[in-house]
Image (cartoon, rainbow over all chains, first blue to last red; front, side, top):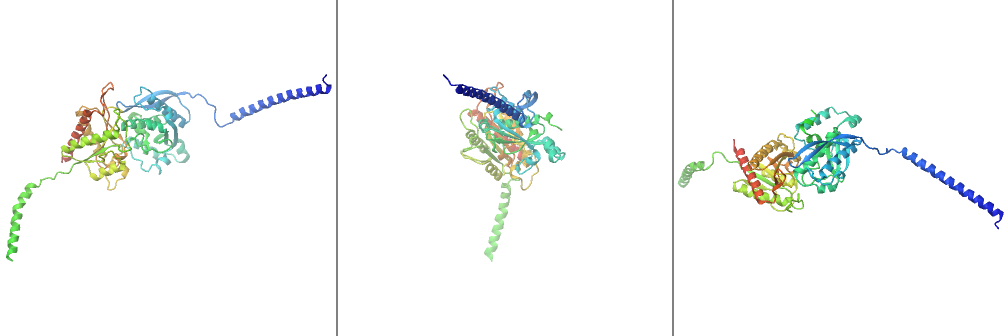
Length: 239
Length: 228
């Protein structure tokens, strides 16, 4: 026979357990809601699908040493740095394809980052003491014309010419076919593609694994600053 | 003194007799020396590209340089090479050798499996006025116009030999510092219109044809250089 006080104690404990369970579930819900609310207020925006836009790629062809303009519809992010990386990734994907006219292994993952910086401070600073003048007089005219009309200060950063610093992977450089022509075609197609999609990019420099490298695969000089307009077909260069 | 007079008279007589002979032997217009610098790219640890026959680019360029040196020597052209063994030579040293030679033509020889035919490259530096102390990294600027002419002569000789060629501009540290008409010559396999290889870089006959065409181009360049 169970005593009466034990029955009452059991009932109280049971009610307390159920009440604690309900309270715990309620607290969990509140914590979950707080977490979701915290995510919403974070500075990063939720991922979304970028709309497809027309991208211009300057695709190298080893058979005749030319750069052919190709137009593709690609989902491009709004951020210029991410956009530059996306178009270069597509370009290198074309080169990594089995039937490529300019075969280079690696693909899109070969471009680690693309940094966009104001061209004025970097291009004329101590970082490029031996920047050579290029032979293409049209390119030189574009640069000098832009520098004379270049806005100063914050406006320069918003509207002035930009220097793109392309950081490539070491494996891409190591596996790149060696040769003056094939290396120059890769470099010029990257420069031309950047300029075609981001017209403010007038100068391009290259890093490999975040550090300066003498040549791409023994020939093309990666220590110098390339003028992006040099790689553009004549009709696409602004007067 | 009598013996002194006789000695002086004998010396004057000898001098008068020898003068016409000396005048006949001396050329009316002295021939300027014609020197060619051959730069075999890569060397030592810097192997260059790997060719399909397993050979390194450094070996190919050295073999071609030796072959071309023999052909030029047989044609009476003085040749200076930047390396004659499997040794690593820095780009600055290559330019230094070329500049010390005061050459009338400098050829930097390369090999590649990419593309087809012979690729000719001239420095992408803008033409500049010659100055007494040019900047080291852009010294070729004053010679770009001559380099383009030399590239034209080489291009014609290669086309006459039945080879396909491309002519472009590039930036090579060694060439950009040379103070001579300089052309980088990159030899790729000969391919048909269907992109099938008809002559590889290891083919001795192909090497001989390229070397002969380059030698013919340099002989033509010497003829042009000696024209008033």
